[in-house]
Amino acid sequence: MTTATAPVYATDQDRRAWVAPLVATILLVLLGPAALFLGGLSAMATDSCGPDDCPPALMTSLTVIYGILEFGILVTLPAFVASWALPRHRRWSALRAWLAAVAVLPPLTVLVLVFTLPMP
Image 1 (cartoon, rainbow, N blue to C red):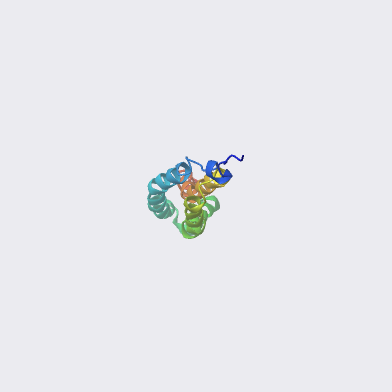
Image 2: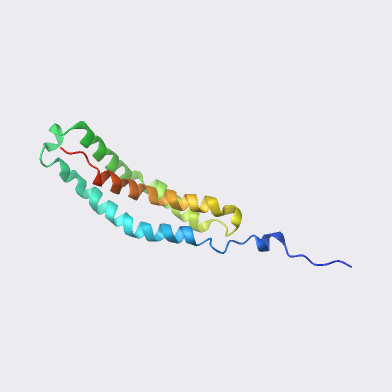
């Protein structure tokens, strides 16, 4: 007499697999436009000194801001899509959470840099 056992993969489902990608989605909806808007306005920090006479720290920060605004989508988009597309198994939950965090990192970095710009 044999007893039927449930397949291992059936109990491996992660019921909370949607939480990390959803939090990343909400944060990206809020932080993404704010980072684009405030990052775009950050060039106005050079109005008082002109781009040639501003301190190097300010110009470096602005260069980093515009670099992230230009190339940050190359990090954000694949990490965001992968966090939603990973299989809904517990085995992938840590990677899903990390990818969701990495997806939010570029706009968050832009906002931190904008709010901590050095004085001209």
